[in-house]
Length: 102
Image (cartoon, rainbow, N blue to C red; front, side, top):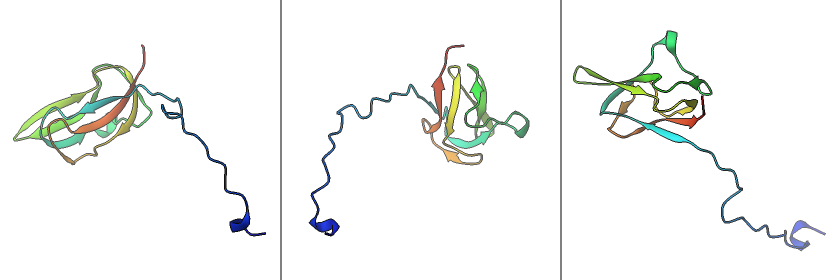
């Protein structure tokens, strides 16, 4: 008997709400158009780091000005979506933060 001769695989019904896993994630966006610069090496953040409200993530530089990119809530830095020297536009996603109570 070959695979083609066997009974079809059972059908698995998907739950309409997915697998039931819900994550509370917040998107940190660019405050201005320009070039994204991550925090300096001594203060560098890694994905998975716990950050405070107001923690400096980096800056967006444009025409000689620097707009700070700061965490708007305490939480875990889940993922950086922009790297140092990336050109970004106003409102472009820069990082995911999972809020935590502190």
